[in-house]
Length: 590
Picture (cartoon, rainbow, N blue to C red):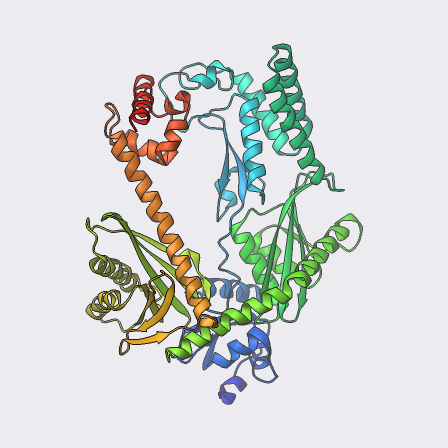
C-alpha cells in the first residue's frame, strides 16, 4: 500500500496521524520510535478495534518531536484539534461535583461542577464527590448548622433565615468578624477531614432542640448524624496523613483497557472513577493519554499512586504533581486494590461491552450498505414539536459511529408562530448548516428527519441553497405512530423496515432519542411560557423579576409550593403575598 513511505519513517519520537481515503484524520498517536510504532500496524495481524481502524487507513503522516515529552503534548493537542474517529479518550465530558466554599464578599457554601479545574483559579474546592446526593446533603446540613449566606441575590432587609439563626443578616447587619472567622475555620476543618467538628455541632443542636421540646427538629438532626456516621464509616482508609491523593489501577485483556481511579481526600476515600474502552494503540500509551486527559479536566491531587507500566516521569512533568509507583506497604496495597477493582469491572462487563460494540457497529454498517453510502461516521437527526402552533421548537441529536454524541446536541427555539412543519424544518436546517459552514465544523454523512417526503423536501431545498450535498432520509410512522418506513431522498425510494432487524432497532433508538430530547425541551419552554403568562397578571412583577422567578422555580406548581420566605428572596414581601393570593384564588376558580 505504502511500503516505501513506511521505510522512510525515522527512528525518532513524535506523533503520527492515520488518514482515510478522504484525507480525514481518523487516529492520532504518539511513539518513542515512530518507525517501529507506525510499521507495527501493517507488519502483523491485528484484531478488534485496531483491525477496523487499519482497514480504513489510506495514508498517514507524522511529526517528529525533540523528546518523548514533546511527542506526548503534540498528540494531546492534535487530538483536541481534529477530534479523530478512533481517539475516544479525550471526548469524556463527565464532571464531578465539588463542595465549594466562597469566602468573599460573604461566606457561602455550594455544590459546584467544573469541567476544567486550574490551580490558578484558587477556588476552595473539596471533593470530588461521585455521589452528588451526598455532596448536596452535606452542604444542606452545614447551611442549617452555620449562619452562612443563603440568598442568591442580596435582599434589602433580613429574611426568615436571620430570625431563626441560620444567617448573620449580611444584607443589613454588621457582622462580627471574629465570629465569622471561627465559623469559617470550623467548616473548613470539617471539609478537610476533621469529622468531629460537625458531629459535635450536630449533638449541640440536638440537645438545644430537646431542651426546647422541639423533638421533631431534634429527630431530623439525629438522622443527619446517623447519615454522617455511615458516610464516614464507608470512607475509612488506613492512611491518616490527610493528604489528597488518587490511586490508579488498571487491567488489560482482549484489546480492552479497564481503569479505576480512587479518590482519597484527607485520608478518606470519597469515591472513584471507572472507565472501560477498546484500545487501538499500545495499551500503555493509551493509559498515559487517558490520565493526561483526566487531569486536564479534574482536580489535581497532591500525589497519584500508580502501578508499573505508567510513565510517571512524563506525567509528573506535564500534570505538575507527583506520580509515584509504590513498591511496598499500605500505598502498594491501595494500588493493588484499585487494579483488582479494574480487573473485576472488566471481567464482569467485557462480554456485554463486546456484544454491544458488535451490535452497534453492525447496525451502523448495515444502514451504510442499505443506503449505499461510502461512509457513515456521523448522523444528524431532527425533530420538531409544537402545541397548537405555540412554543414551536426543534432539536438535533447526533450519533457518531453508532453512539450518541451528546456534546453535539442542539436546541432551537423557532421564530414561526404557527403550526408549519415545512417552514419549521427549513428554518432549523438553515440555521444549523449555515452556522456549520461559517464555523467550518463537521458535517454529517446522513441527515434523518422525523417525517416523510414533505420534511425531506424542506430539508433538501435549504441544503441545495447552501450548495451542500448531504444524503437525507425520513422516518415515516404507521397509523399506530410506530416507525414503519425509511424514505431515501435519492429517488424517494421507500424502504420497508424488518421489525426484527438490527437497522430497525438502531433507527428506532435514534428516533426515540431525538424525540425524547425535543419533548423535554418543549416542556421546558412551555412551562416557562405558562409561568410568564400568569406572572404578567401580577402588578409589581416586571421582566427582570419574571426572569428570576422562572429561573429559580421553573413551574407554576413550584411557585405555589414555595414558602413566602423563598419568594421574598426575589420579590418584595407585599408583592410575594399578592402573588400567593392570586395563585390561591386562581386554584379556587379552577
